[in-house]
Length: 256
Length: 202
Image (cartoon, rainbow over all chains, first blue to last red; front, side, top):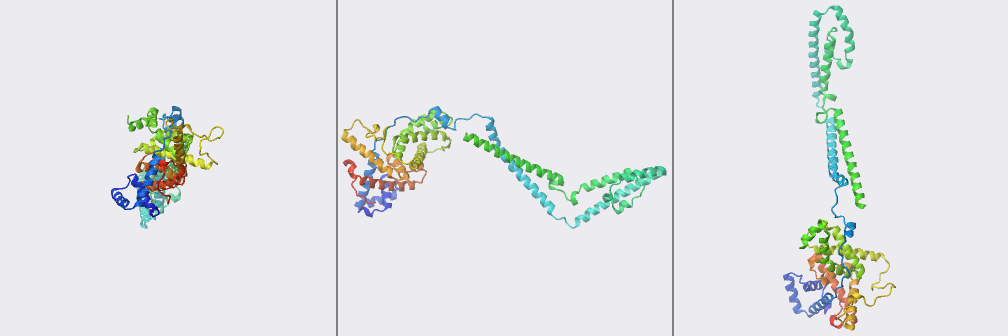
């Protein structure tokens, strides 16, 4: 009648023999065993076979398997290694990886910031306001120069004025730089030094608002931003290449 | 000195401490390898490989049963050897001498305390069981070797083969059924004291 024993029953009988059933399963199987002779016979078979296996003579060892120092040194990578320059190189890998990652992130941040600033349109009122600032600045410069020229004209002879008119043309900045209605209204006899000073002041005023009146990333001008981007990109690439090189070296050493 | 201390010292490169662990476990590892591989010399090689690998990977031991950890390494070594065998054309099951003649009575089987008939019967039984074990799939064989021959409980065996306890339970039951069928199929070879009473009904 053992044909009625299901694979699940065999599994339970096997675990029953090894006392690996929990209390509930054990009690249930015990109850079934007491009522089912086929199960009893199957359990007896399995028990007999387990005894048979456990009664097997144990093969005797012909030798020990203790490790010799040669086996340990040849086969083992766990012998405490000496600190060498190679190990220091390996230790630099995480630092270089971090540097590469940080440089990449900063590069992207600067690049994105730069692109955003360059692409964002200025408010419509801004150019007008800048122009107004420039005009008022030039008007101020022009009036200061006029006053100075008047004071000097009273003290300097006319012949000297003729001499001073010559270098005036040399020190004038290009017309595009200073062309404005107010500068044209300045008297032709204004002193060269005042004009040069006025031009410097004007140029300084323009430098405050670079490239159409907007600053770059972190308040830097365009050239500085480009330089920073280039430096970060170079640092990211160089550190990345160094990491790849060191890792490859380390792998070659481990294979050797 | 306890096992944990020996392991700690071995981790620091103390080979003597590790060799004390080897002496404690070498019989069990060799027996498992022998049951898995069915031959002495490959079993010796597998056992030696096991201890070398254990020493090399001792840092990978994360606590728990050191015995189960070693058994897992031994099981993997045996699987590797079995895979190598499958790539080879034939391997003799019986031990052979230099002239490729089968050795009738391997020395390690002989028991000087037994009569010749008893020795012969026991030898036949040993061979029969090993033949039946060899016929089992490897995954079943290792469970039988661990639980039925080495006497491990299910959880230890599960750790050793890196499988759930339920898998051990299921494989063991199926392996026992197959072994039972194999042994009953060769009933006349079984000594009377070990003859199974049931019928083959798998």
